[in-house]
Image (cartoon, rainbow, N blue to C red; front, side):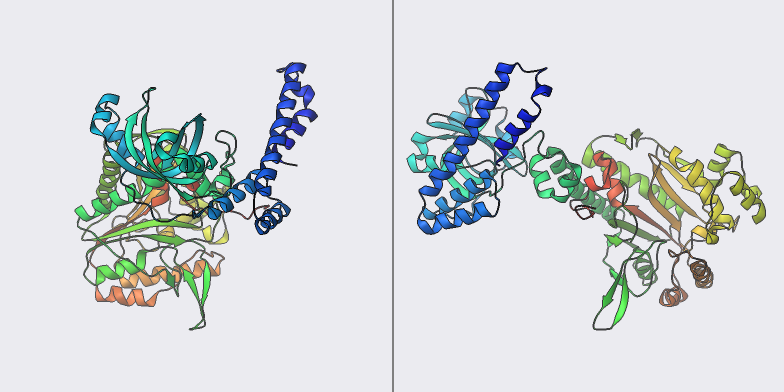
Length: 559
């Protein structure tokens, strides 16, 4: 049963449901129309097939057996017909001199008379998105990377043979045209075709515009179709690299050097996360895909590079949701002789530069909130934020048993390795504070236990010099005054091993080479990590990380 027959069967099976909006006569007319459409489709296929040589008839029949739908069979027949007439169905190079946006920007404000006098000749290429004919003249909208433009094909200009090629074209085909920039009688900017070149035959029909490609899962799986059909998907696809380019330019003006560091590692270091494990055959060893960029970059500070950053993929073998993808883009930056204050200034400046230079505004919709990036961003300590929400002042508490009792009273569940002062504070923050930090806020003063690579606060060694940037109740950046004491760092690594023994499978290994590097002397430094995907979500105003990744990780179909 072809799609038209399926539609008719659906209407017949639900005739009563349609009776409220359509009369019995209208339903009968609709059914008759569908019958004629189905019959015409079959006749078209039969005529095309009968006109082919015997060997091509067999090919078409094989395709029908392969359960291709009517449109797919017709398109393959047209492909064969093109080849038979000496035209490559999948084309050759074509010299493009302009894009749709170029034409709109250059000629959009000119009158029909001005364009006629200028006789501007351009060559454009793109995908056919709409098509209609009025006798010996045809109109199409073709879409390139910058948008759509109308082309006008006149039989008396291109000739009978070329006009037949145009008539046989389908939506989704890719063509190239050369012609004069004009405005039609309706005032639409167009290209009047002098030369028409078939470039690629689309063997599958495009989804129906408004109802055929609305399933988000399918949009993410078949991003190539999403980019064809969804203007916003294409906008985001081009905006993301513009944002990253702006970041690179900003970091360059701040005196930073971009570097590259290894993706594969023998050790699990740099963050608290579950890794992906792979195997190096020639060395016969298991290796980790990196979960962070930190330690190699800090080695470069030891080497004297002073201001370095990297934008790269990292991999964490964890769950997927609207904010998390197993592989994502992280940026980490390290600046010798800086501290937490320096990282706050760097971050606020970077976000505001992107907002002004790339997007052109300071107000955004994110995570259901109205976000304003202007002004001086708030700065608040973790313990003060908890105290404001719960009345509990953890800085005044030194007894672990008291902390455990408070956790129990507030129904906070703790894993064995979390029954420590710092972990309990972090649990209170996650429960009572995190989702309340809506406008840009630097949250500082994290407990030691959850910050193994950070310098202790000189006034209270239970805490470290660290901050996180929160926007819309979500973490956007994580920064430190970097720990450069090799003896202290080794002790922190050893504490991490104890946590691993207690069941913390995200605890770090001991990286003795990094300890050795610190023993040569690393200058005091500030360091920060940014989730680039989440940053792009904010600036493109998207609700899911999958909307800013061209090819997000997906579950297999049927799961």
